[in-house]
Length: 297
Ligand SMILES: NC(=O)c1ccc[n+]([C@@H]2O[C@H](COP(=O)([O-])OP(=O)(O)OC[C@H]3O[C@@H](n4cnc5c(N)ncnc54)[C@H](OP(=O)(O)O)[C@@H]3O)[C@@H](O)[C@H]2O)c1
Image (tube, rainbow, N blue to C red; front, side, top):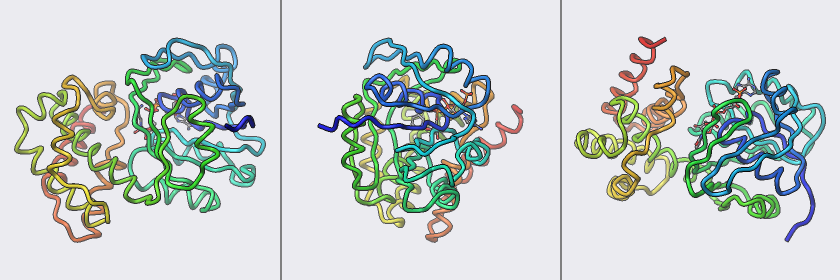
C-alpha cells in the first residue's frame, strides 16, 4: 500500500472532476481545482461538497485557482468536450512537469487535442462509469453505487492511490478498445434518449427497431476500429440498464446546455467514414439532435 501523498490538479471540478477531487482530498492528497473565478471563490470558501449514495455526505477542503502555476503529479481533465479548448489555457504545458494527464471525457477525439497540447507520452487515456451531477459550483450529487475508472497505461502506483481513495480502477492494455467499449454503448444510449426525449425503458420498448439498427451500425464501426463488440452483447446490456436512466446528453438538452454531440455522435460518423462503414441511421439521429439543439438555442 502506497503512503505517498500526491498533488493532483482537476481541470473542471464538475460532476466527474469534483467527485474524484473530493475523494482524493478526503484520502489526504493535495487537490488543486482549476476553474473559472466564480467557482474558484466558492471552492476556496466551501470546498467540494458531495452527496453520494456510495460514499455518503461529506465536504473536502481543496485548493483552487484559475490556472496551474506549479508542477503536479497528475492532472485529471474533466471538462466537457465543448469547453476543452478554452479550458486548456489554464494548464500551460511548460508548467506541467512530469505529471500524467488523464482525460475522462466521453468520445475519442479529445486525445489528439491533448497530445498536441502536452507531451504526448504523458497523456493517459481514461474512461469513467459513474453518474455524478454538479448541482451548483462545488456541489456534487453522485447517484450510482459505483465510480469506476479505466486507464490505458501500466500506471499501477497511481491506480493504487485512486483505489485507496475509494474509486474502482481497471488498467487496460488497448486504448482504442477501452474507448470503443464505452462509446459503443454511450452513443446509441445518448442519441436515442436525447432524440426521443425519453428514458432508456421507452427507447428499448417503443423505439426497438431503431435501437437495433443503430447498434448494428455502431458495433460494425467499433469492430472495424479493432474492438470485438457485438450488437447482441450490447443489446443484452441495454436491456439490463435501469429503466428510468437518462443520458447526460439528454439532461444537457433539457437544461439548454451545449451538447457533446460532436464528441459522441460525430466521433462514430467520422470513424465509420474512415473505415468505409455506412452509418445512415446514426447520421440521421445526429442531424435530428443537432437541429433540435439549434432550434432551442
Ligand atoms: N457526469 C457524469 O456522470 C459523467 C459520466 C461519465 C462521463 N462523463 C464525461 O465526463 C466529462 C465531464 O462531464 P461532467 O458531467 O463532469 O461535466 P460538468 O458537471 O458540466 O463539469 C464540467 C466542469 O468544467 C468546468 N468548466 C467549464 N468550462 C471551463 C473552463 N474554461 N475552465 C475550467 N473549467 C471549466 C465547469 O465549471 P463550473 O463549475 O464553474 O461551471 C464544471 O465544473 C464529459 O465529457 C462527460 O461526457 C460524465
